[in-house]
Length: 124
Image (cartoon, rainbow, N blue to C red; front, side):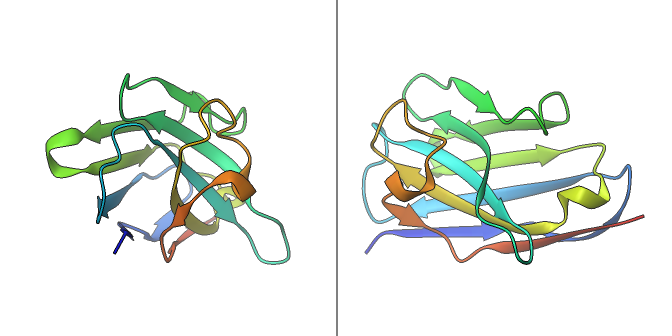
């Protein structure tokens, strides 16, 4: 059974940092791209960032470029999203997901597996 389990969310003041983790299990993800999406109340899923297991290439939404950093630990099948200089508008539920759709990593409907989400709240 495939599982993606997020952790690391919480409440932080504006300007602070959080590190989210996504632990993947249940299959081989070497040919998958791992993505992070977020959803604020009343809004649709928004692409945040993605990383490929195979080459480690990373991609970021313009809104988080320069503030968020993705990394992976292949031995632990875990992806990390380091979030710095957090802003109130970053408040959302953050979801980890996996897709085998290659370059279409910004499109949430193409993701095969999803985690349960972790809440990030940034106070002003």
